[in-house]
Image 1: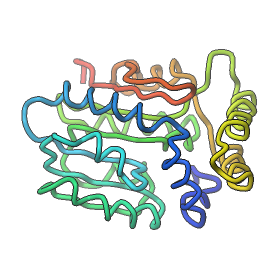
Image 2: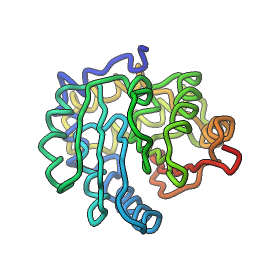
Image 3: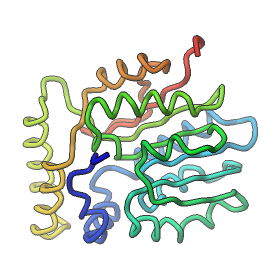
Length: 237
């Protein structure tokens, strides 16, 4: 599967993406605070197992899991640079069984492992084409524990935005607002966005989720184009 057309920002130019994270340009801090509250309210009955698809350096999700009894954490990413950074953050999970694998996220879902209480994907599935996103929902629906949830944090298009309009709006915002990054870094991010980002409308994701036997998207947090939703298995599964 060739979901990400240009992944150099996560490999050769990891330092650029780290600057984006450090500057909170994509609103990670506020969204992950909201996610931490959701996780604390959702999981109150003991340990949880976590599958993190497109984990990057994992630091924000690990922070959102603080105070939870994580029994198992499996992080998946295509970038060895990201996984190396993630390895440095895993000790914060305490006694959890942890594993990091370099793999395509769709292939990783099919691994012969137990099901998970929380399947999380942060800023990853917008790299997938529409049919691949449908497969993502189908595969995840089959890997959730009975009371498990899928949480997606990603970019999405606004009402009335087609992909071309979204790309112009988003890259215009990057160039005008991410002023702590050098212009060359902002241009590199925009090059990645234009070649590799295929965001959907939230309603489209809900349709895909329902077709896979999951609930419609339920919003946890929203900051501009950056949104976090949760999905659960429906009673018919």
